[in-house]
Amino acid sequence: MGKKDCCCGGGGGEVPAWFMTYSDVITLLMTFFILLLTFATNEPEFFAKVKVVSFGGGGSTGVTAPSDELLDKDSVVLRERPNSAAISTRGSETPPVHTDPARESLSRGLQSLQTPDLLADASRVRIETNTSMMRDDTGAITEQAVTQLRMLAQQLKTQPLSLQILVSDPEQADFCVHMAAILTDPNGLGVVPGKSPGRVAVGVVDPTMVPSGRIVYQLSHTESPR
Image 1: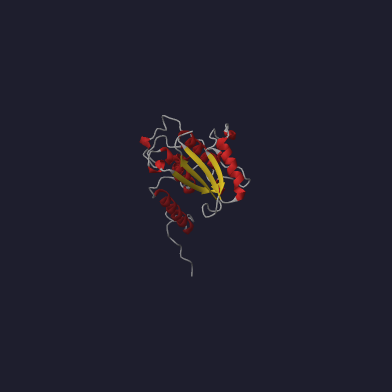
Image 2: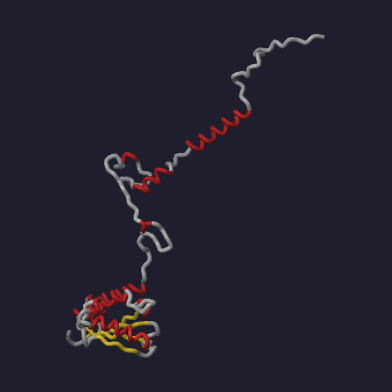
């Protein structure tokens, strides 16, 4: 019994043009999904944001502002970041958002003596601060203390006041004498101009009057300026 000859078309061994293998279908599907994920979102490219943040927008109204409002074609924008701009454990170039109420309270108390209010008219003003704010670990006077002494010197020059520097710790007496010398020495020891002899006193009082670790400035009005 002989074999029948096949009369099917395309019997030459060639693959038809419409035929694709299974791997080609998978490849096309992957390409389709990649294109879909790439072009189906309306979110601007991240590089555009980075460019504006790093180099400036040249007058744009925002990070994603319309391009017709930019001035990049007519101007050159350059931003230099100093070495201190890097964020570290000690902070960055960002201005501080918190203040120190303990330090500001003393400054406000001294400044209030210059204003014609009830505090300025009082016969005696008592201002209390921490000893740690006035001297550092080595025993030297701090910048905060120098600022306060400048303000006290200004008060002693412009108003009929006498000053008492009071502490309860005997070991702090020498430091208080040093501060008094700054206010009374003609040259201010190179810190503040003094020239207020006889109007500054130092005293060691009972801890009930001045707590330990504190310094008290007691300003009293005199009858006439000296």
